[in-house]
Amino acid sequence: MSSTTDNPSNKNVAVIGGGILGVSTAVHLQREGASVVLITETSLASGASGRSLSWLNSAGIRSDAYHALRVAGIDRYRTLFAADPQREWLRFDGGVYWDGVDSEADTFERHRYEKDHAYNSQLVASTEIPRVAPGVAADAVPGNAIFNPGDGWVSLPHLIEYLADELVSRGGRVITHAGKASVVVTGGRATGVLCTNGEQYEAEAVVVACGPSTPQVVAELGVRIDDGSPLSMLVTTEPLQHDIKAVLNTPRAATRPNPGNTLAIDHDWYVGQITEDSNGNCTIPESAVQELLDEASALLEGGPKLKAAEYKLGRKPIPGDGEPVFGQLEKVPGCYVAFTHSGATVGLIAGELLADEIMSGRPHPMFETFRPERFS
Image (cartoon, rainbow, N blue to C red; front, side, top):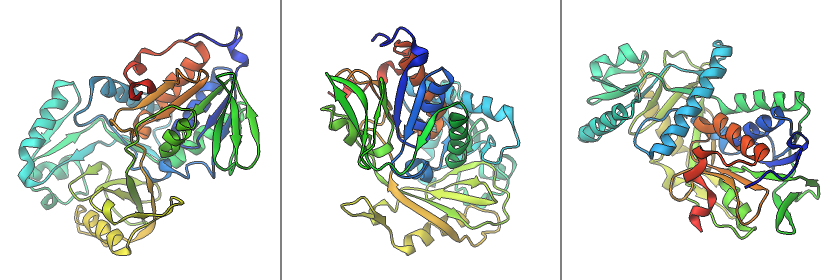
């Protein structure tokens, strides 16, 4: 891969996608001197980023390359956090994980794996939960739990707004409600973006970062990326008094604090109850929403009644093999892809490294195993 211009600071780049990966890549490109236009189908954070639990972590078992990328991602968030520790939309108060009482062996295996990879992991008994995670009902934990004190969470809509403001202040453009977008190819190379609203944007490089729609967009270019994106839901509660600070990853509800004294809650046991029509619109029975709220309530000290302020449904972007997809398409030079499940955790670092690839023409070694061509 080589640079396509003798003066990379003048490079025009179009980014498709108003989620964390698209906005992060756009602002990093603008910082490096590119002229960027960010194009999104509807509004910013209207897709997967707007319904993400956005737990910042590299807990659990995954490939070494993916773990390294996630740890670097957490580092960038810590830098942002240090600049203003009072932000209510970015916190580092740890994460707690436990499985069912019949899965103690799996919990120990997870803990040992994390320790072997130098990830801060503490095995705690249920009686110790109030110490490491105030606000959690001790009787909610059937056995041992894992506490990861370095974990955190971010409200992606707040972060996206923050980054988009910087993008515009640096001279970048944000085009919302543009409809679906496709990559324009001229002479075998990406040369711009065409939207269903009729607008076309010329560019020397195009970034496709539109969440679960990414495989479909690149399929139009003759490139296959296996897609494993499942249906999902995020529930945001009405404001309530609670002492929860840590992210809770439990057998029946994953829960974290959210700005405005609310909670964000998701899981996957109810996915079979979500229906999706041909237009991508999703519905779920209200009973399933209430059951999830009840499961989360049981985690909280005092078992407060939780009420849903809103819930959002849609596809959660996950590549077919579970690993991220980053980098330029060999078949379509000038077209770059960003598609991953862990958009929150790797959002800042992925945007930084992808922008560096585009501006320098040098493939970044941390993306070596994540190239799109592995599906071909």
